[in-house]
Image (cartoon, rainbow, N blue to C red; front, side, top):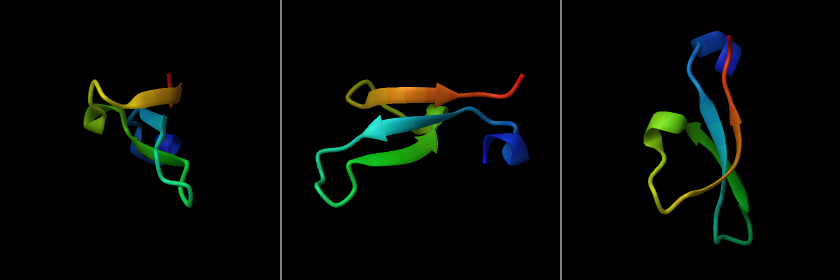
Length: 42
């Protein structure tokens, strides 16, 4: 996704047992999100 859109993405930890992680754009994260990994293209 990052290479196709040239936008940075983050893997965010959630409190949901069925979806413990989710991938979102970095711009869509909030201060309450726990970012596990951030990916960006150079």
